[in-house]
Image (cartoon, rainbow, N blue to C red):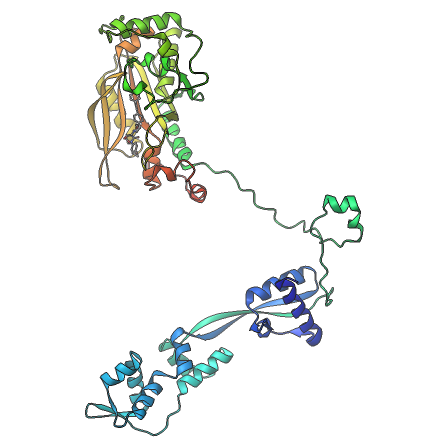
Length: 497
Ligand code: FB9
């Protein structure tokens, strides 16, 4: 018999003997008063079977504080002071009292004085009466027993002395229900296939179906904070007239991830310690855009028609056919720009926000993958000024107002600028992005008109998300250590607020 069943049978027998139970907390079970929880668990299921009916009652009572319990057990501070003084032959000094009673001495002697139990004689405290009655203790005992005291003055004084405090007592009164019996019928909650096959369901009693019961609330999905911030960025881009690039393919050939972007085949970014190369299949059978491939080869080797001198190194088609996990979504931008050249140039604005993969050592700010946010703007005769101007508009949307630009190097843009903004919350300048004008070597090889200029810029999704959600370890945001509660509880954020 489980504990609840034992409690239920105690209740039923109590009812059987006394018709009603006026206060469940008077019941004793396993030698102790029945707790509210116990009573509740036993009562609810019996009531559900209409074997009993019950009412819940709340009572404001006084309970002893920890100090109250101490005084109740050992006597009031003033009484203990009196006893100490009595035990001493010729009275005690305050310090002697303190050494005997600790901080009870202070409180106690004050009260004992007021009660006229002791008096001062020189430096000594001596008794001023022979016997005392420790009302405080007895009153506390009374309160302990019945939870109340019909002497409000005393109550307020005990409250003031923090020996008692108000508390709420909840208890149930119970009476027999229409289906009262001493034995609790175990009602089946489930009709199992086994009951059906062995026919045992015929003699079983089943719980009534509670069609009103709420089902288990469906654990609705929730957007990961990164996806919430991604929606913010998508909103910004659409508001600025950008078109989203298709980024649903993580695997690219080196040609689009590197060569089309004029990244030299000897560049360290193309080494396995920076890039994830696929093993099976390791390379594409062939490159489709043969003319374009030829002009990329030409440009890498001697500058092609870009006006540049190229890298003066042999360019290998084999190398460019290798399959990689894209290291940046710029691998998609290169394909969109080539398509733009083939379909006939017209001004355009593209953006992408998706995963990129870099073979980096994982630490609090780096994972082997992150989400790149990238924008590309193409039009005739765009300048560095246009780039800087647009960065102010773009980052202005997320309240990054005060921007600073620092020249940097990317293989596919020249000039290139890192963008910094002063972050009030962090109280420091934060690098919030990277940008540049795509190199003519890249654009001319695609066949884009000579006066077309393309601005490119990028940042990560993780950084702004970590700042917005005050997450300082990127592993709390992505990966096996993510705390799902945190994800579910994470509110929608507005980057522009
Ligand atoms: O996100 C970055 N910083 C950042 C962005 C936003 C932000 O909060 C917003 C104001 C509210 C806070 C910080 N960075 C780019 C800067 C640094 O964090 C940098 O250390 C790390 N970078 C990543 C790459 O790390 C290897 C962030 C990632 C990055 C870097 C460059 C590009 C994209 C992502 C790019 C590009 C590009 C350039 C030219 C043409 C096309 C694309």
